[in-house]
Length: 117
Image (tube, rainbow, N blue to C red; front, top):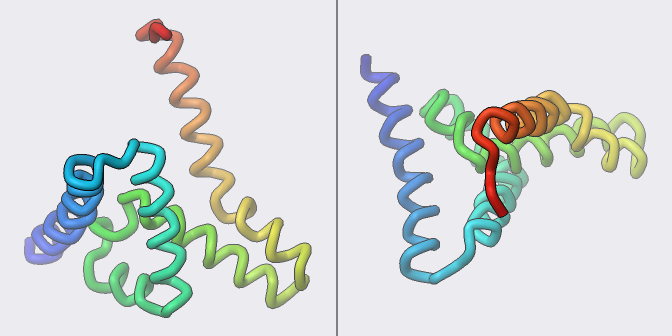
């Protein structure tokens, strides 16, 4: 039960930070998303995101910051093996399932709900 509470609090704090950027800094959702993804990559580069995942579990792996962590992690792992080509391909290798799922679910949601605009 404690792990669930920790995950809820950490995930909630990440969401609060995003909401504060929207409300107080008057940033667009695209800017907030980019900042949070970049923050996840920077935290992983500094070696801080993996301990956060160990502490918070899903509270750190579900928010968009985890996507930045995955991009950095994949790029770094493949860069060690294949150099510059690995740096580019590694980002997509680890995140391809998430990107594909987002595209597929968005397509089906658009078919069901018929978005305007």
